[in-house]
Image (tube, rainbow, N blue to C red; front, side, top):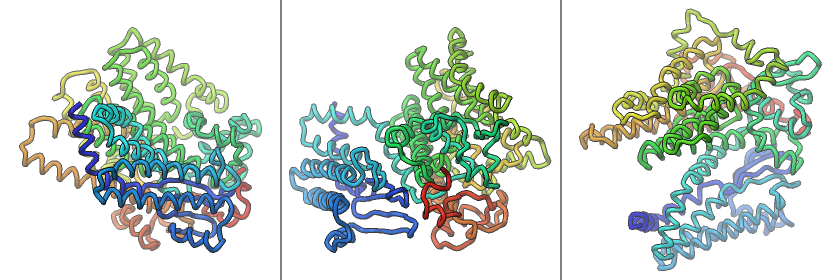
Amino acid sequence: MKRCMMDFRTLSTYYKFIYLLLFIIPLNIFTIGTHIGQGIQWAFFRYQITYLGSSFIPITQDISYILNGVISGKSALSELMIIFAAVGFVIAFVLLLSGYSHAIFISGLITITNGILLLVSSFIQYGIFLHGSSGEAIPVGVPVLFIVGTCMIMNNASDQQKSRAFLLLKKSDFILLFTGCFVIYYLHTTLTGFSNDTIPNQLLPYYILHDHTLYLDQATAYISNYDYAFRFVDTGNGHYVSIFPVVTPILILPFYIIPVTILNIQMDDYFLLFMGKLCAAAISALACTFIFLTCKKIASYKIALASALVFAFATSTWSISSQVIWAHCVVELLLSCALYLVVRNEENNSVFNIVGMGIISGLYIFNRPSDAILIAPFILYVFRFYYEKFRLFVATACISGSPFLLYNLYFFGNPLGGYMPIASRLGFSTTTLFNYLGLIIAPNKGLLIFSPVLILAVIGFLAIPKREENKLNTVLIWCIPVIFLNLAIYALFDDWIGGSVYGPRYLTGILPFLAIAVCLAFSYLFETNILHAWEKTVVKVSIAFLLLISVLVQITGVFFYPIAINSGSISSENYDPWNTDHPIIIESLVYGITGTNQIYLEPVIANEVALNKNKITNEPGKVIL
């Protein structure tokens, strides 16, 4: 209890700094009208994008709009709630700076009040279900305000109450991590594009819930478009299905239930983009959460948190998986869950953990067959150490995978479904070795170029024999050959670079393994006595440098890589992964800052919304559906 109290008192001395974060986190994410635009609301300003352009609107301008009658009715009342909350933020922060004896308690009350005001503002503008003729809203920052406000109020509680509050807060740390990752992943709502590979994933859940069909016949704008047509396969009876596996769109169905089934929202172009981004951000944040929970079982709390943050913001989990609803998002989530079930099973052997791994394995194999090899360590784990439960494991894997096997056999006549024709593109060539190396170190595509901090994973894997022998270490050792095999599969592919995507898209599947290996490296370097004090300092500085570069590279990909730029802004030169004259990281950064046309990408149509902007904004929802 003394340790908890010391931590709580230490936290109270930093409330003024913590409170500054409330000024910069997004409080509300919203769409406008019938999806003619979207934006983010902060404490003192909002940023929105509509077909008329982008706008930065400070709170002072909203006050002017109300006073001049530009905004009236429920919109004015909604804006007044936001203005009152902004005033509350200022008052609370001034109180914290004043040193007044009850400042933290009063500021906590004001913070919770601000959260209520912002929630009421959303209800007034968008309705009780946060959806209406004015648009939709997701008040993502309100839970953060309630949590921070509650912690501040508890600062004046008794020692016993504080201890209980701190323990409760620590037990819910994974919820806070998920919320933080989700909010940051969703920050870049200005992304008005999606890869054409993700279109079926975004469409199918809508058709399943709205039309109760697996067919995509109504997506005529894509089926008739030369650049998209091959993603839709004629089943032979005039109906079209997705060429890609349907595990991902089936798993994201819960995200669509409220907007489609309950609110009956028309799924126009903007809302499809919104749902794709929402699902990708949520699934990637869940993967980060399971990595954190796994690392907590094998290392100290600080190292577990650091490892989870490396996975979240220093790898392609941020710049690829969290951006659009690729199958890679689900690959990361399923592997992260499987790793967690292993450590949980070693802590408390249970049949439910084996069943969970079986369900995950069945889904994993059919979600992305080219990554299926990555599930092998978990199959070996159950076979080797829990053979008496292996039949149960296989049975549950068959139960979860059989619907997708039947789908592939029924619509495509083979177990791999639409991936069978793609399999023919695998083969040895004179460039296979260079492809293999390129996946790791190519200047415009290599894993260690886009996430140099992952070099620590090598140290982590090498440190496994030095750790206390246990079954998890054996599983991690088995991960090493499957990682190399996974690299080999993609090296054999004629499109080993993964198209015009920022970074090594095909290698996102191995990131959960590498994140755990980074955790082992941190534990080996800083929780043992192998290094002298000065050596630890040098190692910390080196790791900080690698981490800084990795995070900056990911930020460049998230905010500056021009995936949604119209074709006139992209050079017709092909993307060359080995081209050092046009480094994509540097040129993306230059493009994002200056707008200079220096991006050399393959001319892939990445965004029909951007290319047909005028047509779409004149009649929202008439292009796709």
